[in-house]
Length: 263
Image (cartoon, rainbow, N blue to C red; front, side, top):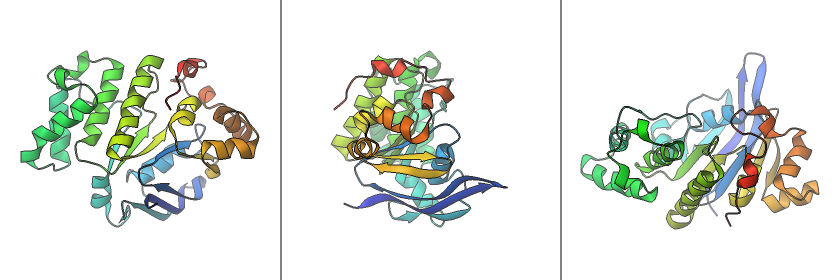
């Protein structure tokens, strides 16, 4: 199968600190790829490099056949991203937020209305398109951010902690929409999450980063087998010696227990 994302010998240094240390991995087209690691492990720095926010110290990144370093605009057109922190304009309606994003990504004017309607219908918000975002719940805002990331027809969708701080029922709803995007539209999903049960339930492939290096990768079953553990969470603890939730204010112990199986 073809790879939509190729990362080769990627390194990022901040002065004497090496945040990401010579990592390489690929993501198959149409797959769901979970990128996991404790806070401070290099996960966020890697994502920022993949999405053109940070320039690597060295290494190569290719998205949809385009070099992130040499063909930034083409690479950006190939991906959508939902950041961990909310980035919507609360004083605009959902539809106005979508129009703004469509203009920024140069969606042809004659196609905007249809694309916006389609994206909002995917996440179940078309009927609420004229509501101000400030009146949306946390889960609705997340769904709107996913819709916004879809309007320019990306090949790969980056999701950075898309369900942090949401209740279990809302998290299940978000993942249901994401699963549908992957299955029905063959969209590649690159996600990070502090909820191990989410990753175990939805990911085709997993890579675990710690201290700037990828320390394990493969399918969930392969990782569990190699670590001789019964769950991805136990494998993660064995590999890193840390519980991701201990480092994250938004993910409280016990929250992920309500996460239902999604396969």
